[in-house]
Image (cartoon, rainbow over all chains, first blue to last red; front, side):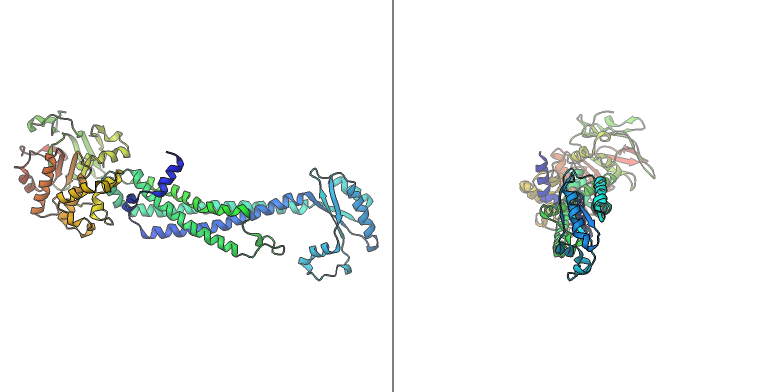
Length: 300
Length: 251
């Protein structure tokens, strides 16, 4: 029998076997609620992990190929030093492009801190030059020496100083998200095991009767496993749906909002949500199987 | 050990010849079986062979080990020492699935008639078919016939708590035989019913024996045993002082 056929048979189930095990009240509610709550939490942990991953990727990939040259000079020398720095950069191996940011771009950069109405003209701001590297990159130390010799007011910043800890932080956040998912899965397994144990204990008499009439332990276990798997699947389905709705209600990503408003799924990542109820079902299946095996072994 | 309908050995004494047994393959076989609970030994040095189609009563005072003996007969307990063979296979070498399959060949009627209270009587009677993977609906005609035989047709949709003591006993008997087992073990089947009902149950068990079933009834109701005297050739076994003995002459 193929695995697919086995899964199909399990999903379809045996209506008569289902009837043999009576529904037990509080374990139903416990399983459905815990699976739902855990699925809801997994949605957010997954969203956090994926968003942190995107952030880490962006910081490490996009910013890794860019650098900034900052020119601090008296206003009358600013244009000359900027042009000199651009000349140096254009003749540096490993520099794909270099351009001085215009006034509006500098205003945009400062707007989050000083507001959009900032009169840049009145401030002694340094001139920023955006440098894009080639895939091979440039020799940072060599470039610094050249700039120091030809453009005294130029300072090269290849972002490494602040990018590395941010990438590390985003990576940690991503790891934290996955760790949270693992803990939630384990907690779900533990709760369903408790519920299954309670249901099996409450049905000791039923198990005794079924054994008396010749039921195999695998048949008895199957009835419980199917029940708990379907409960977890249903509960997790509702929890996932609610979690997804809550995510959709978050403010949409914007430049001002930064990371928090980007917490969500993008593109194909939404399909990952479909895996959460399946994961809950698999956890319930394994937890109930272990609980049933242990309980049936202990019942004489 | 001598093959017989009922071969007993107590303190080295073989009782088979005294019992005048028929030759035949044994369905259940005990060989120097002992069984202990934490409180001490309940059965000791029990040897017995049950041949197909035989009829036995098992007597003894309360707490003497009748129920334990029956549980050993259908693999619910494993002996502390000695061997019990069900249909030729030693229970110690049987896994749980083997035991389950063997139980489909042994119908058991308990005094307390355990049913699943959330299922109707009809569903309870069909339970052995259900757990063995047979479609109960296919056997609906047999089920109806069986309910008619034990006089419970009108109660098919009743729930177990709604049944009287006698109805429960007859239902338990019907459930025990629905798989057409080779052996029927009844533990105090008349313990909770009046005389008339106990006679009716006895008649049903005797009818089954005439169909070739091996019957063992654990009871301390000597009236029931006497009542069977003129209807069936039965052996009376007695558990006394942890030992199994042949009690008196054949009925």
